[in-house]
Length: 332
Length: 233
Image 1: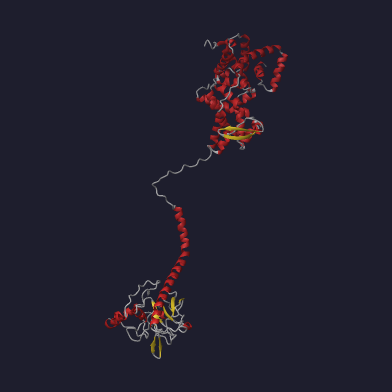
Image 2 (image 1 turned 135 degrees about the horizontal axis):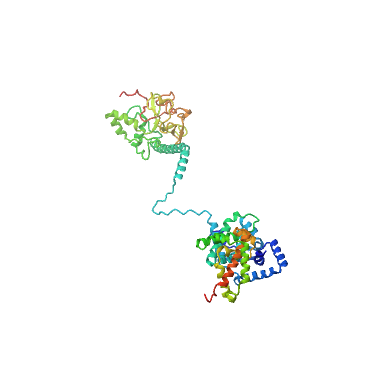
């Protein structure tokens, strides 16, 4: 039991052993002597039992170390890429371009018809404005000639539909008038005077034929009508002749044997229709040719012939080179 | 430092009235006193479940005790500070291994002792046990020799020394003990741990604890009788 005397003095024994030592000390008086010796042996240690003070900041430093260790487990923010001032800033990444291209590919088929439609509508409006400009010139001419419009005659050189151009030109009424339809890529013809036209007819018949086909530009003009076998021009009578068409987009034929004569629209607007100028001054977009008085075909007379009309209200709008009485096609 | 760090570094364990305000690294924080009333086991359990303030209370509670143990065992204040910090760092890292209900105090001492041994080893101061030393750990023989020595010894230089000289002589003699004997003396005498707790901390049988303590006392008695006084030295 002596081996437990040190533990007994230090109170390091468990409860059972401690009780056993107490019994041992009671039963054996000499054990008290041994206990005293052990106490004396331990006594010098008491000189250094003073508690050691930790540094004041030890706790803070320890907490800091632990906190740093715990925070070290957090994912660090990746370093920013180096700034390169010389490199051009690209606003479009590859992904942006791909997305934009995809959207374009999807939207383009949807937008394209709308764009084409808007483009055609714009050209049609420009064409209408041409006809209005032409109406002003024709009305000035009409005012100067007691209501008569320029008319096609039986004999050359004024025997073709496009003769209104040199007539207006002769009287200085063609300024500001465009004979080129904006929807058609053909160039505007160079106007000639009636004198030049007569000389050309006399001296260069081939050139004359060519000029007659070109003078009217992209537009068709009224051939007039026959009355008692005589070719008459259109006369403006307010209230009576308002519904007469006088100018329109040129039809796709200038010969009676052309297959297009049957039903084709003007090709100025891709065959979708034609602008028609009426004697009252209004311009109408017509998707077919049957917009004359009583829904008559504006490009043929009542007998469905490419000739002058059969009466005052049988208006026929013909391409520049068409004669009032069509001759047989010239042999080249 | 992140929010968590700030929160963590503001922990404290000093009890006061209902609620106390403490300034730490420029932060004013309030820690409920209720934490200081919890047992070590409850505090560690709460820390494991995310209540970081519990760690500060635990640190505050063991600050003096554990530093004193390490200071005496290592004999070096700077080394003791390092080991103290590493001990709580290890406690934080190993708290996931803590088994609920297991006493925290012996576990904390175990961690501290292992950290101290590692530190001594790094400083080439650790003395490994030799076979001779194991052979000397025969309980009965040591007891006999301790009692015989105590019965026959006369007054030595230590008995004449007083005050600071006596304290320094005692400390010097304890510091000169081999590590495995010194740690038992420190744990049993200065830290007041029971044999069973010391056996658990060091991973040795209780009988070995007793024998080492007796052997340490024998060496101390011999040292106090044989060594010259400090003045003579």
